[in-house]
Amino acid sequence: MDKKLNPLNSIEDWEDDLLKRYPENPSEKKEEDFRDYKNSKRAESVKEFYKLNHQYQSYDFVCHKEATFLQFNQRKMSLWDALEFLNTLVDDSDPDIELDQLQHLLQTSEAIRADNHPDWFVLTGLLHDIGKVLCLFGEPQWAVVGDTFPVGCSFSKSIVHSEYFSLNPDSSNPTYQNKFGIYKENCGLDNVKMSWGHDEYLYQIVKDYLPKEALYMIRYHSFYSQHKEHAYNHLMDNTDIKMFEWVRKFNAYDLYSKAPVPPDSKALRPYYEDLVSKYLPDTLSF
Image (cartoon, rainbow, N blue to C red; front, side, top):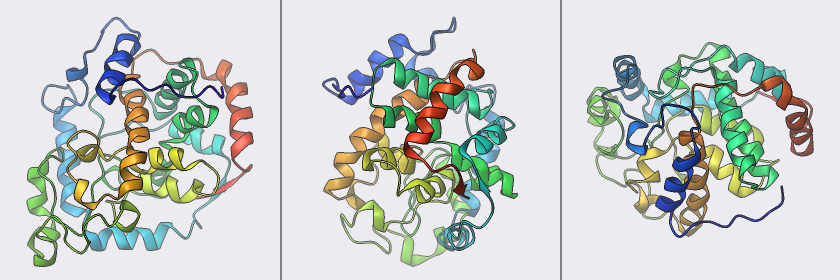
């Protein structure tokens, strides 16, 4: 599990290679069939999700949620308690899959493990959506899941269903009506507020326990407008650019390993219990 990564020539090659192997199911989905927000049978419900998300994810909203949840006083529980809760959740923003979150996490981590990546990379596959426990604390899904994006500056048109940002109060705030907004050029993403959700929440919970590469994967795995469209290069510093190669590598597994056949969670649990105990404490503060 400590074998070093040998990335292909480009991220596009990496994704093409993964698509040859995942998902291993009769549908043989092609790359263009993933994140299809027009033709998916869930397209209408996903559209309604993003209408709410884009209407309410303002700069002030993000500040309020950070003040509320980054005190980590909601509950103490083990990672496995959090995973069992996710068994009840199907992501309203995802047009690709209707499996519960635990199955998706295992599909992601098992795809990573099958390619002999370092064990912290495998663990990241298992962990990356744990922040969705915010739904357990009464948060609506539009404030927990979905694509993330910077707030405090203009919204990129490359963001999925960007037409709904016209409903957002920040769209009428002159301070935010250019690509820099309240930020400076190449200030670094650590200085940029992202829309509130499970990515930032989990990052803040585990930031003292995992390698920097893993933390970038967790914090920015839903930042799709940057993954491929590079819509926010002007805010990124050199560290961000370097680390986003890891984000893109992870994202290929997160997206293309989705399949309707669930993994055997009982058989896999002993391996993942050992892996979790290597990096994380017995209980975490949520």
